[in-house]
Image 1: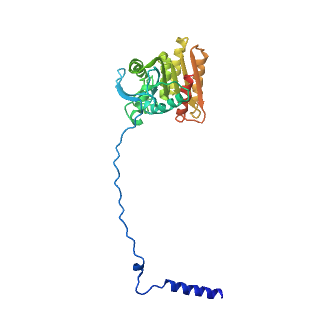
Image 2 (image 1 turned 135 degrees about the horizontal axis):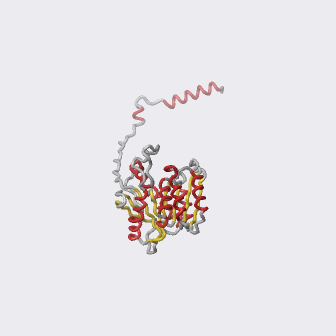
Image 3 (image 1 turned 90 degrees about the horizontal axis):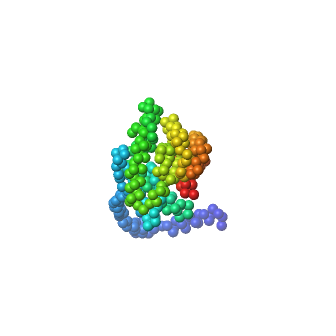
Length: 304
């Protein structure tokens, strides 16, 4: 059979196979399926609630030194025990306290750090824009002139560090030591950026208030590097500086690492017998991206 005749026969057979009796319709042969209506369940109502960290407390208190209301966060990831704990004070606590709450316990589990009570200090606001200028006021210790190019940033003024330090010294630390079972002569102060500037100010102004200082990317630039004058005043009046100090900076901070090293070299040159000072440049890190590394390296350094 030729291929043409085969195709003709196949077509004829197919036509015969698909021919329907006249009495039947397609609808009768293939009844339409019944379709159930689609029921959309109502969206459950979700109650909004704040996340809480176990074994922590939060309260507000008004400082007598400056009339400012502060939010205080205290606790640790593990339950408190009968053993007295050293205390780690954390400025900019709204952001840094939850982070250190996790990081500190991980380093305790790894044997790098002892258990400690964490205390965060900040303002009773949730949005950064609501308190950015207030922290700038509290972390700076001199008054900027009105024509300063930074005047718009410091919209709540400057020079509040002495009053803030007095709040920590005379009000918050006594309260923490009375409320919790603490090692009263083992306190650490941590701070980053302007918070790091404040930590340097506390180190030169009232070094005995804290035994350990963990300082990240301090704003040495503030007010024509006035903090260096504070250091010069301190070293001219003291024969010793009893403290464990760590100062870290990011490698991508426009030369801040050089300023930090110059400050550290100056302190080291005085050969204070009870000063333990470590510095670290975190290569490839910026002013903000260095924060996790600075806390991790810094806390380990001051507790070695």
